Length: 339
Ligand SMILES: *Cc1c(COP(=O)(O)O)cnc(C)c1O
Image (cartoon, rainbow, N blue to C red; front, side):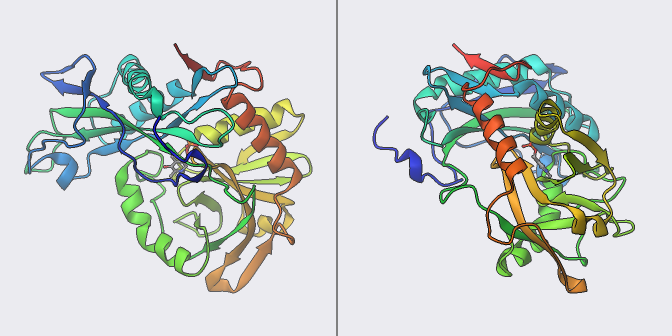
């Protein structure tokens, strides 16, 4: 590939050779079609524009030492997108079409998959939108599923480091019985003000509390929260959290490492007892938390005094990354090799 500086890529959009699309019309999904256009021809009354019929996914492909391309937990993403489809009444995309489009998009753009050891990866973005015209509030009867890819740089350019996060009690991301459990754009629109405020104040993300009682730890911006204490991995159970596939993977690896795993309500005061805390998601795998500031209450919970990540977080991080690029055996069948 001509002159991509793999080590200095950001988490942004870079044009690649093509994307892959499938259309839902007359009750049927079309065979995947390769498109070289970055544009979508869309009706101005499409439901995705007016009523938020939109869901997306995020996953990654890596090059292994053996030169083979590996996609991480693609099937989980396909199943989660089906759940999002049910959640906002979009036509449910078959797992096979999701997987076909993802594999094809990676294959067709294989020259954009960063080399082994660069720390960079190929970010895969599946998108599903309601496309047919509707003025009354009703689900569309036509949909577009598309997958584009873009190379992204290593998340931690200056090493695996902690950052502070803030609680801003005047904002909620999602309602307890709302759409928080689905990966839909509306949740992101709802989080932009709080996220922007947090960034202005020097925080890397917002730690949301449960919207109803403001007593329990919920989602951490676009990532799941976890804490470590007494050889136990603890992550919040809630009806407004999007189940992170990274979190699910870390729970398994924590068990394999002989730790206890608890998914339950986490009262805010419990933060004071955690030895380590982190956010997890596809972008960073783990982003360790330096401290949580409960901004309105003027309280802080500190997990790292020297800015370094904790021992358990580091171990989990290295283990998951090793599986993703094939340095460690894939005992759970998480990896799809692209031939
Ligand atoms: C995508 C996402 C995550 C992380 O999920 P992964 O499957 O680990 O990438 C966490 N929270 C929200 C709100 C998300 O949209």
